[in-house]
Length: 209
Ligand SMILES: Cc1cc2nc3c(=O)[nH]c(=O)nc-3n(C[C@H](O)[C@H](O)[C@H](O)COP(=O)(O)O)c2cc1C
Image (cartoon, rainbow, N blue to C red; front, top):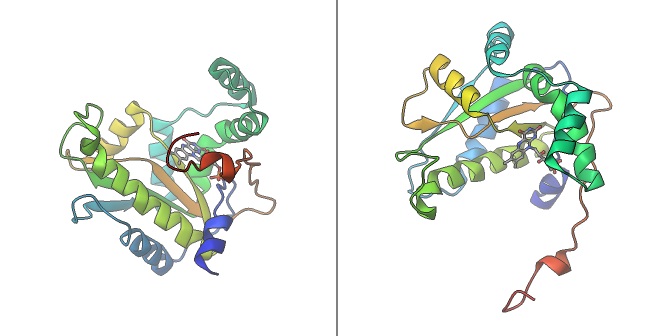
């Protein structure tokens, strides 16, 4: 698969087959992550793998309260979303926030060193470590797609982030940008319809027109 095909095939999956990912393959994907660009040349990234399902369940129980379909609709309406594809995506996604993490063949918590307070950046450069880890995560997602493995990222709420940092012994100066759930798609796994984008309208020559 060439790189454009891998990029095009990467789509978020929230329904996973009950199949683990071979550890050597997980290492290869993380290795692809380490090829991403980095703000300070150091790639201060670590990856906590939550492989034990019992422990994973215990941690998720502490962190996430599942929301049902009705609750999801209430949230979507409260957010005032009007785009059909976007509403459809959230209608599918919100009730799966717990199950997608629990059922993933491999649940990874990427961690990056953030020497200054992440949520009180004094300028854009202070967010460079955060930007860099997302380059790394995208590399992993694209490499995974090329292997027939797909996944989803979830941004932890503050309480979740604190719970995980404490229980997983993550050093004070490291942050968790997201959960990274990877796995083989379940039969009939949903790939959500995307919002139509016209590239012509998004490219501006010399000045935003
Ligand atoms: C920064 C970021 C945060 C996201 N947060 C969540 C999340 O909390 N829960 C979730 O189910 N999906 C999350 N996603 C996945 C998006 O919903 C998904 O990428 C988007 O709908 C586009 O669909 P696609 O990935 O299939 O192209 C996130 C993606 C990104 C890049």
